[in-house]
Structures are given as C-alpha cells and as structure tokens.
Amino acid sequence: MPRRDRLLRLSTYRLALRQAGLATPESVLRARAEPRRRYRHGFGEVLRLVASRHHDVMLVLFWPQPAHGVD
Image 1 (cartoon, rainbow, N blue to C red):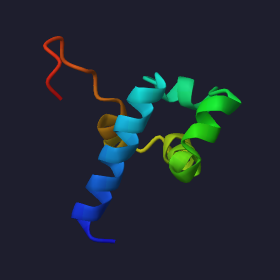
Image 2: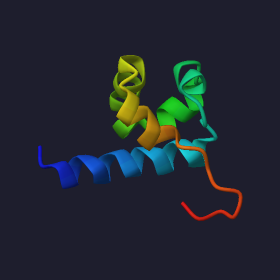
Image 3: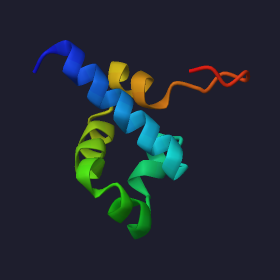
Image 4: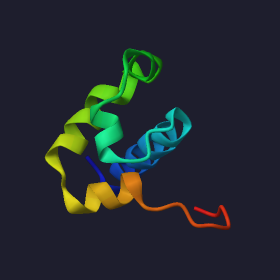
C-alpha cells in the first residue's frame, strides 16, 4: 500500500477514535460494544494496530492533542 494511503487511513482512524472518546490504547482495548459497533468498518484494524504497539503508529493514533486545539 502506498505510504500516502496508509497515512490517510491512520489519520481517519485517529479522528474516529477522538470522536468516540478513545484517547489511549488501553481505552481502545477496553472499548464497549457501542463504539465497536459504531466504528465497525475500521475498528478491527484499529484493534490490530493497537495490539501491535508499533511506536510510530501509536504516535499517529494517540499523539497528545495540543492545548490550542490545532492538530
């Protein structure tokens, strides 16, 4: 998969996690059924990525949100 496509997909997952209120890897792993159902199209992939704990992927998905709100 081209790098640009992968980064776009990770960015989309990051946005979905933020909207679901899942701000940490642990919260993703403990997510209840409702967020899993709502984001079912990508949640399996997100779980796989979080379980792998790859450093760069964790930074992309869970980089701390700046205080001024610009991401």
